Length: 204
Image (cartoon, rainbow, N blue to C red):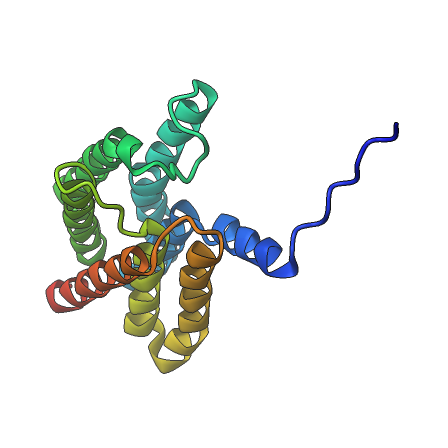
């Protein structure tokens, strides 16, 4: 008997998966760091140097830890959809970001990048509280996308915000479409991201 053909996924699901993958937190954090470094460092070489340093501690190390966990079977994929398994990824993210922020502050890195690192440490701590003791799961995708929109508005003005906000909405929709989060979880992530964006704007 010939094998049964698998029906193709609906177009909406394909778009949602693409948005979830391409606009994942690691990529969004790298964008946030790049924009902040480009607009706060004293020169282009310094922007590259400090941007790479911040991206290493804030995106590459946490993403590498998560990828290693996937290979070892600790969690199902790089999005760590099971909220009960998010403790260690969040703690590693917090520790790595804190270390990178301390290095940047000690070596005279751009103030905006140091402030950004401190704000992201606070975000990781808040996420850990919601995820571990409180047993809920705010959408990290949505949270980081909102911060990316906020940073775009700070440095690129209305045009940057206008370009970023539709992508943020797409990310939020994708998490709901794939049923990886509930509406309250997506809203919670958006609110935490908005608070973080405001804090960064006030402190930079």
